[in-house]
Image (cartoon, helix red, strand yellow):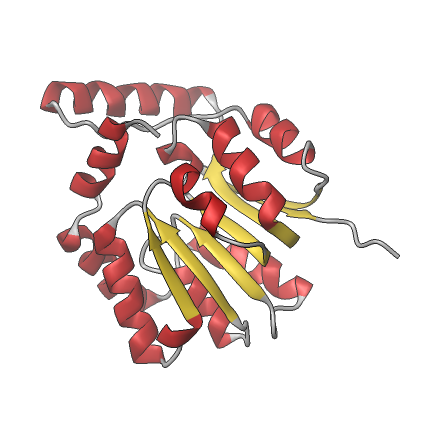
Length: 216
């Protein structure tokens, strides 16, 4: 990730945004796409499983999996504000000590983070310019399942992303969004020995879970 994008993430996903999202989560629970991802992981069986939640935001995936009996794991995020509110919610729910919080660009911190049963990137690929690098750094860490939520690469999405980035340039804001091709993402993931198990597509977001085949 470029330094400007890291700075853009800090500016866009600030304390005000993080606290607004946390309040919404407490009122309504996770978003529809996040709920789909969590439900698909539950089908795999979450009790006692470890997790690595990359770009986990307020920690919705973690909180939901921990409520289902997950053993804990790591939350890695480039936004200090998101890490702070994720830790706050974990403390309120009684599982703060089971989560390690790692701040920074995942490509820069990945070497010090171990493998986990579940690795999730919920609406993260669209914030990251180097899709191949992010997948290559994260997919090998998934022992059982690798879950992604990212935008569908439709014509409408391409126009919307172009418009958003144009507006960001006018505002001189460093944050950009990135629409990575579905075929490119899946091909990159499959290179790491994972198999596509389930796909759920909505109007904007697609939820994809890949499994790692178990050896006899």
